[in-house]
Length: 160
Image (tube, rainbow, N blue to C red; front, side, top):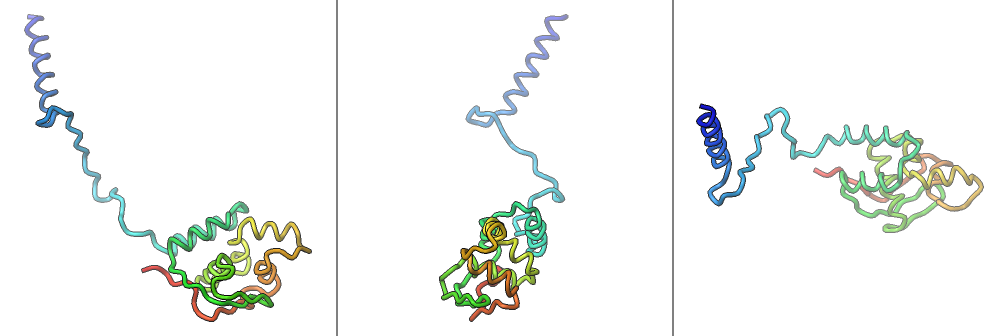
């Protein structure tokens, strides 16, 4: 009796094993579908949520300027513009990082502090050397705030 049970169990395993194979003999690897409420969306996240996340990251004290530029590249179309920042004049295509960052600050209503923090390590460098002359746009922003920034045209538009 033991022999027939083991033979029967063995046959069931063979049948199951064969049923789990494709016609070519390879294992079938069909994945279960994810329930509708757990599927990943192909839509981009809400820009305001991303902006709130950016604002939170700015206050971390470790935000990198490259992260600001990546945020802008992901969510905005950029068109170089000439701009004035206090006493600093910038031609179109010159100081594009400052153009993008200041454009973001004005478009999205960032505070002066948030705009400065968006410059990341460059702003921290200016803070460490208050008498220095590098990073003219950051120093002008410290002196005049966003009220001193004027663009010839809009450098950023939100991506559709």
